[in-house]
Image (tube, rainbow, N blue to C red):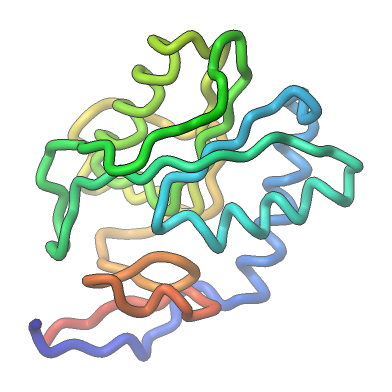
Length: 179
């Protein structure tokens, strides 16, 4: 493991909480939450997804939830370019309106792969929601329907995001500084 530190906070927990509430409001306004299936991409989305799901309660909305585990990074800091399904969705996708929730939109490969796969499996519509949008390394043309924050080309951790499975527990988003 390379020497690094994560002391530089880019987005604090209060700013994240405020934006998550705004995203819930946007989703409620545009989707039919009682018929919505929310699919979290693990592991990175779990904190973001949990806060989004809690936010639906404010609107008396009760979407179904499921998870997928996809891998394209492993222990590296850049995508391998190949998306693998590690754990698949169990909910019925036929005619479902799906909201895929992910931690970060970087290369675009994972979300493009997921949207195509879910539509092929019979979903009526697939929308995407990401906490972070990092456009610097976009390898495929893809835009999320809902996004929390745009960030520059830097490696970040916290609020579910990790570096080699570390730092997911941080309540904020921090920059990883490599030495």
